[in-house]
Image (cartoon, rainbow, N blue to C red; front, side, top):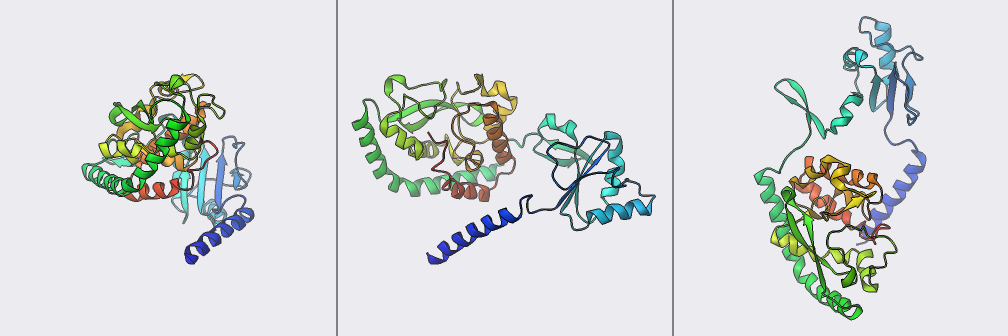
Length: 332
């Protein structure tokens, strides 16, 4: 116990000290702008190629040595240049002993998850599809093992929470709502009721606000501690949900008065895996009401990243990370 406490304290102090001393980050990145405007957000490692006498000319020993000298000690070199100059820069970058990249803004519209090779050609990975059958079995076995082990400990708390809800307001203990699940098929989600029965929103047309007058006194405590989500362990046991995955949304969920799928067509792609009790977006702090369109896009990108790079270890890391964000400023 003392060892764990000591490790936690040491890591926290180290993180604070290094963040103060490394304002620009841990890695040294050299950004070279050749013939294109320098971005307003460019950091201290950004330089103009022409001002520094840099040219991607392999026929010139001076040019090659100049590039190698500037790249010395760097962790990464990033090139921003015109399409016509990319081929020359690609050849020049391959001579360096550091990781090198070329920015291609034209690919932004595809929102690719990664780049791969297919039949000798470069391809963009746009959707990784459903998990392989062995990964599905592994994920399901993990869900059942954790859920069944936790259920005996959760049932007594379910009884206490249910009693508190009944004493606080009239209506059922549980609230069931239709959500979007695996393969974009609807399912009924289980939650502890946190709002007055007469104003419960079955379709989720109205996002919960910080001072929402529909929430009961007990419901406010349940929502701030995420206890209202615990009955979803039943959805995990029934196979509708997983412990980790994209959080399921109601059919009427909106951001800036627009339905989620109208904001970003990629929204439907997040449902190639089962929805989860928690997810990568939640661990990163993207939770609460979706007031702005960016609230959705940030969560969506995290969900797609999770789907693309799934592993059992990622599920374990997310579950452990969830303990750090149970009490969150956006939990209301």
